[in-house]
Every structure is written in C-alpha cells, then in structure tokens.
Image: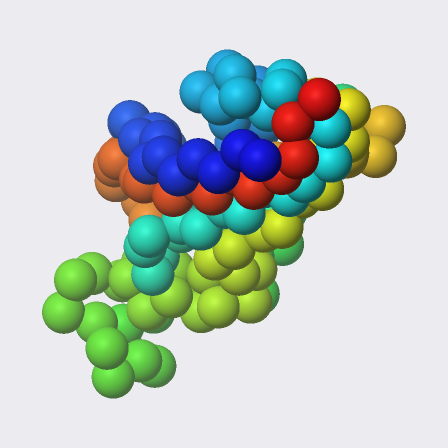
Length: 142
C-alpha cells in the first residue's frame, strides 16, 4: 500500500488557465509504483481553482478565460466584497463555479486520464501569485 501526501507550490502564475499535468506527475514519482489507486488534488485558495479539460489545443484555455471574463464582470460597484480590488470577488465566483478539488484514478502507474484530458490550474486574479495544491496519493503497489 502506498499513501503519500505532498504540497506542490506553483510560483508566479499569471491570470488564466494553465496546464499543470506534467508538473503534478513530475512531483509525484510514486505514481509509477501504483497498480491501482487514486490521486486527490486540493487547491488551498479561494480565488483560484483546478479542473480537468483539453490538453492539446491551447485555444481552449484562451476561450475559457474569455468566457469567464465576459460573463463575470470585474465591477466593484456590483459586489459588496471589494476591498482586495475589482478582480477579487469575481475570482471567488469563478473558483466556486470551477471547484477546488479533483479525484483522478491511477491505473498501472499512470493517471487514468482520457486521451485529451489535462489538469488545469485556473488563476483568477490579475496579479501574478503563488498557489499551493495539496496532493494525496493512495493505492496498491505492484
């Protein structure tokens, strides 16, 4: 049985949707030793989120940013919570819609993602910042 928890720090990410699958895998070499199990991911922030989506065409990430920017306005006049700036409350709304955790199956030493699936870090604030994702790996070894 393999049980492993680890925080991964993502430094200096700009606003947008960032493909982080390889970073997760490279920081958890123990995945290679798991015959079957699960990887839990939890982002420890309220103005960023994580999700799984297209891993091949970067225009998907651009279109997601465009959609959220267009539909969730940065206008401090319409929100009560605005003391951290005009992007703060919209960032909280976006992170609530997208979510703060993922559960990914592991099969034969690999994340059991679909062919075109990748893990995204979704940064919703305008300033570059660091984010922490807590990982928990549980599985049976080979």
